Each structure stands twice: as C-alpha cells, then as structure tokens.
Amino acid sequence: MPAYTPGIAYVELVVADDRLVVEYFTRGLFFDQIALARSGDRRSTLLRSNAAEVIISAPTDPDGPLADHLARHGDSVADIALYHDDLPALLADSHAAGLSVLAPVGSRTPHGPVTARVSGAGSAHHTLISTTSHLLGRLPPGFAWESEQVTFPVPAESRAASVRPQSVDHVAWCLPAEDLEAVTARYRQAFGMDMLSSDQITAGPTVTNSYVLSAPGLVFVLVAPDRRRQPESSGQIDAFLKAHGSAGVQHVAFATNDLVTAVRMHARGRVEFLPVPDAYYDRLPTSLTDRPQVRARMDDLRAGGVLVDHDDSGGLLYQIFTRSPHEGGVLFYELIQREAPSTGFGRRNVRALFEAREAQARVAGAQGSPPSSASPRSAASPTDD
Image 1: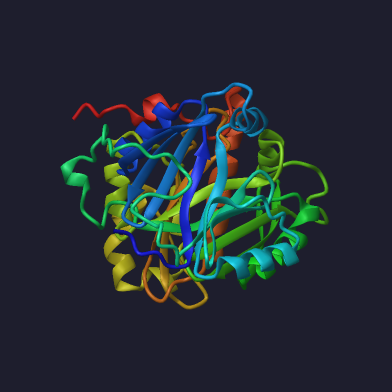
Image 2 (image 1 turned 90 degrees about the vertical axis):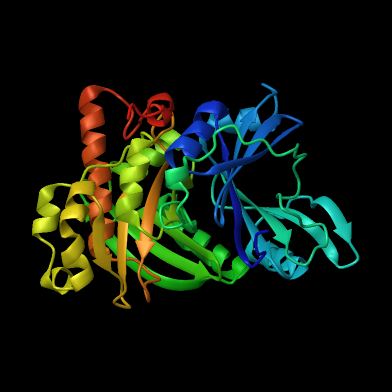
C-alpha cells in the first residue's frame, strides 16, 4: 500500500483517446493499469509505477465539463492532486494566496474535509487529499473505482525497479510573461513552497525566465517568456500558450534509477525521444567528463541521447525528453535520474533540452506537422523483436 506523505498524489490527464494514451503509458513507460472508473461525464483509468500515479480520463458526455476542457486545451494535464496532513490549514492558505477554493468534494469527517479542490495556474487545478483521513485506501478518493483490471501487464523484463518510473520528480508549467511573478507568489504562499532557484535561458528564438519552487514531495518549474529580450511572440513557450489556449503544464518528469537502461527499454516499447547532437557531448566540461561514473557511461549516454549535468550542490543528474505522444504535440514527458545530493537542475541541461525542443519545432514546421508529436498508436505498438 502506498505511503501517504505530503506531496503529489497523482497527475490526471484529460485526453481524447484514452485507450491509446493508456497503452503508451503501459507498454511504453511500464506503468501498471490498476483500476477503471466510470461516472458522470468521464471514464478514468488509474495507472501506477512505484510511487508515480497517473489517471487518464476521457469525456463520455459531449456537453460535460471534461469535453469542454478537451475542446479548449486538447490532451493536457487537468489536475495535480496533492496529499497534505492539514487540509483545513491548506485551504485557508490557498484562499489567502488568491487561489479559488472550489466546493469541497467527497466526504467530511469531524476533523474536516477528506478532499477539496482549488484552482491552479491556467488550465490545471489541484485536488487536495487529507493524509489523516480513515477513508484513504489503495485507490485515490473521489472516483467510483471498479475492481482492478490489468489489461496491459508490464513485460517481465521491465519490472526491475531501476527501469520503471519511481515517482513524479517535477512538473513544468508554461506561463504568460505577465503572470510569472503572481503565480510564483501564489504557489509559495498557498503550498509553502521555497524558491529553489531562478534562471534565464536562451535557446534559438526563445528567451525565458524560470523559477523552481519546492516543498516536501513537490517541485514546480515555472517558465515564461522574457519580453524584454524576446519582445515578439515566438519560440516554444509562446507556441505552447497559443496551442494550449492558456497557461498550463508543458511536461511531467518521472524519476528513474537507471536512465540509460530505461531509455533502451522504453524505446523497445516505441517511446520516442528527442535527439541530441553529438556536439553536446564533445563540449562537456572536464568537471563532468573526469568523474568516473560519467566517463564509464559516456558511450551509452551518447548512444541514448541522455544529457548529463550537475546542479548547484554538485550532484549529478541525467535527463531526456520524449517526443509528445499526444495529438497536437503540446504535452510531453521527461525522464530524470538524480545522484545524491542532486535536488535542483543544471543550466547546461536545461539549455540543451530547450534547444532540442526548438530543433524539433523547426523540423515539424518545415514538414507542416505539429511540433514534437508522435502518434500514440505507433508509439505504443508492440515491438517486433
């Protein structure tokens, strides 16, 4: 049974074709399909890999709120649910910070609400779940879960803990330039998040300002265009805001213990990753290449397109972006491996990841296709070997 500690409980996606997206997560990213729920205007599937839980929801009522969300934003993250040990206090802090406190949902106990919901940045909101409730069980509350049904079992060779996603490492948001400071202030006050770092990154036509906010079990990366250095609406952040229709979640990053091996295994499940030019590895500084663990892996890192960097603590981190498996190519995923004491991000990797996205956008633009979009059907189809 999962441990209910403060942090991310689950991430809920709203998608047009839940079957294909579930297949991508199960056959591609090695999540287990745990349970199904059918109620109201939606059909939902709970997926789990170690501590990472993802709910895939699709509208069943063309006039319902879920269908409206899909029409406005396409396949996207609608909910980042959080566990908290003092829900009444969290609701009070959220209200004081300017987040809209929506009507509490689910049951109540003498100690307060079991679940509630508050607005978030742009198109995503936050379901808040009390860790002290006696109603907590194996499955997230608020859904009419049916008996467990595993229709896409993870291949036996992919069940090693080092290969499968361990948890949600962070969530990255794209914001309009004018919203960055206000959203940052609201999340810091509402959820007690600390400012881990701030940075400015230039990659092609994109110039961004970013803040990394952290709390126990929770990391948000907030990114917005820098209108002083990028006055025109160009680059990948503006492209996201236009395609998505508002601020929202650009990508979800999953932590893994062995990224090099995981990339090989996920590729067999037809997960596609953004390529990295060989020049990236040729330019790595000796402060990285002289480390024995990096030197021993260099050929594998290069072959898999895995980026390597260190954060301000000196801890190593390895990262890679997927191509988007969603129609429209807006939402995508990241895999990340950290070696202690890494808790932050490396500037070199962030720039390289942005450059990979810009390069893919240029290729897609030349071909007349959405940026970084891979068909869920092809991405999740069985391998031939």
